[in-house]
Length: 153
Image (cartoon, rainbow, N blue to C red):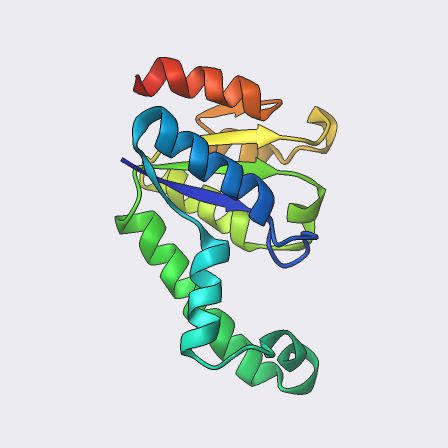
């Protein structure tokens, strides 16, 4: 099986790499599940498109920036649709300024793929839309892991 690791990147301090690395190792060790890690995939796209300074393009060349990001968006949407079995999503303060995570969760819900969401906001600050699109909501990674052990062992 394969999991999509959804969560903030653009505004997260490490593009969300830390928690994704932890979950990648845990899923492999626990079940032999693989992951789609958009941090790694976007780095591969940056290298293949020669877009190492793409973040600067947001200010200096918005069309070029949007064109490159569109490639990332298309890849992520296709992967949610056709390349994974379930979504693990970290919902935190960083995700609120972006849009990709919202779209990934909504798309997964629409195509009936499970969305396992770790919510790090208060329930009052949690989007009702995202709550409704989530299959299960957890308050921390340990609770998610316990659930996954019961579900996939």
